[in-house]
Length: 477
Image 1: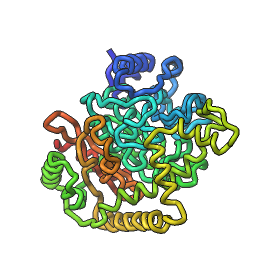
Image 2: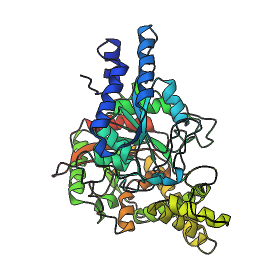
Image 3: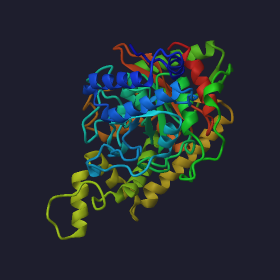
């Protein structure tokens, strides 16, 4: 019977002929079918995955050297382009659309022998914190089917949580990898802005979006990042810094200087059980020899408003291209007016949350309110970036809760958009500053619901982030 613990163990079993790529693919296809009720996958590429697995097994039998991700089963959030496969962003507006090219991350995965097993459910156009906004139904948390998995990359997180693939790729604009990782009890990494190419990622807010990684162990995260990171001629925002060998370098023993923002743990929205667990864990970090100190950041209550002003502004521009003319949903209602035709297509194609954000973004970009909202939000973003540099000039890392509560129940926050948006209060800091962040699954609530701790480091400092994270997961929460 096939079991998966890590890529390294899996590769050793392949070398020893104790398993095969075909067996691995069959196992995950069966698991996906068994847990179909979770709605984590929108589509499974079963036949082609088996064909690819067979080719890899034959190559290995012929003595060909295994590549870094040889036979690794990967799921893609339904916002990442995979040529000749459907790509819908979990939206009706992209009904039956097929990708015409591969995202850079997909090209790099395939080049290293990975097997793409399917596309994963998410909040429509990556807009949401609960995965209740998909046009194809909500994703269920495998720890408790009455609770949300987090969003927007809920399907990608649940796929790892429930053992439906080895690695998932999601996207993180304001916490959409880290928050569902927190709710599902898995690891979720958002790299620095510019560390991983966004080419082939459907844009929500282009200056915030970053492709991230879900896994159950840090070594697999490190290896995957090593494969997908680096310069890309198709994305001018990617930094030119060389990609470090994350997979072999996450071994350094070092005591770190760690800060936490006092206001994050004193915030009235923070769940008391989460707060107590993190304070207790801070003491354990100190006992392990790390220096952990509180710092002040008086702008915490401004980060969520600034984030939503800026991201909705970018979203209103990015989503203007979806009009049902060249591709996607077209209304069947008769009309002779082009503007009315656009309106009908977009009204039928976009869901409630996407419409809300497009309208908000259009409002803050309007001439009467541009300076009042957009310009001020940009100033907050600059302050956050400057503050992060001040912090990392003294400290190696910054820790905080990943989310203010554990996974909440479905529809619990649907009555109040502001309350839902506050689920991002701890994660948007990293996106505003462009720094890497990771959610580590360290705790469980009294009800057995998993939750984690967020760790952040300075821009392009993924290696120390992964090193510190490795030490932290060894300290029991």
